[in-house]
Image (cartoon, rainbow, N blue to C red; front, top):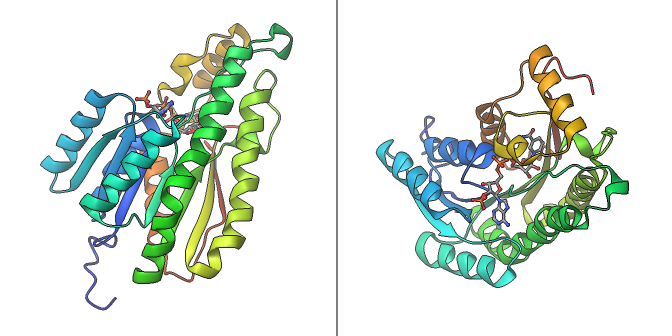
Length: 258
Ligand SMILES: NC(=O)c1ccc[n+]([C@@H]2O[C@H](COP(=O)([O-])OP(=O)(O)OC[C@H]3O[C@@H](n4cnc5c(N)ncnc54)[C@H](OP(=O)(O)O)[C@@H]3O)[C@@H](O)[C@H]2O)c1
């Protein structure tokens, strides 16, 4: 610890970021690399990942791209095996890939429900399944590891027409509380981050008229968070001394009231 470079507090660490091709994941991967971690970035859009890897490299960091669909357990496991072979055991997982497809429940948009559940719950679990052994091994060897899951303010508050999305995020928060208790004794810290609105591509997939109106209204009356606000928070969580586990971080735009 005394040898630590204060400008690079995550030097020697191996971070994995899912949903790294845009938004929260992309900004966090860049920031974790700035802090000195080697970063494995994972998503489906290979081109976007390659651009990110190149940018991180240009800024003096090290990153590797893995194209995978988190809903396919074998693809995530293959990426996990390759991460371990190329970078060593992952000791930080930012488990962040997600989709938000609001619709009134009576429209019976089962395609959207299924997609939200598949990515936000099953994909999250596939990633936990693939990387937990590495986190536990790394924590035993290096003293600490981090599992940071992306939840949402939707896990706490009520948002009409966002029932299924919010339900998936309530799952993420409650799961994280349980995993903290299971993994904490093994020096793996577990955190759920619950952001309010952040300007990303997440909103671009929304087609529900009332949700679109609510979003465009809120953009006029408040300043949304930026992906960099979340990235700095992820960096803060990961750079705490090993004894400190931020269990749940709710981060809201100052002006967001619902
Ligand atoms: N933006 C907000 O207001 C907000 C607030 C609270 C929580 N969140 C949560 O933050 C997380 C990141 O969202 P964002 O706002 O950054 O949105 P975003 O810009 O749309 O990013 C979503 C990321 O998830 C990836 N992804 C989606 N489906 C995937 C799949 N099947 N397999 C692998 N990767 C997949 C996307 O990559 P590919 O399409 O390339 O696969 C993309 O990199 C999500 O969990 C979201 O629910 C966002």
